[in-house]
Image (tube, rainbow, N blue to C red; front, side):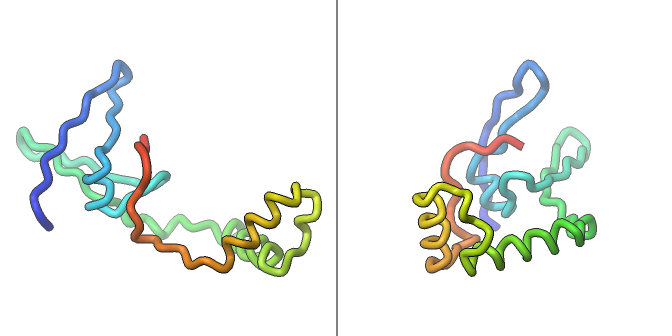
Length: 106
């Protein structure tokens, strides 16, 4: 991994926004987790791989919802333009490695 130097400003609440190049290098997105390790006077930031907390009920629900959307079932109460937009996106592949647009606060 190449060296990246970015700076962030600490807010009054002690929060920072991870700069986009850092988020991309770590492979984290909205809802992702990072760990902070203090080593002397350096802080090491790393991605947390925490897949052990996946809720099987939520995974099953999302799978059922995806199936319904793919078949066009149970979405009749949504506005027609939204339904059409959702169905149109099914035909396009999703690039999970695409760059993140805009700032994301963790």
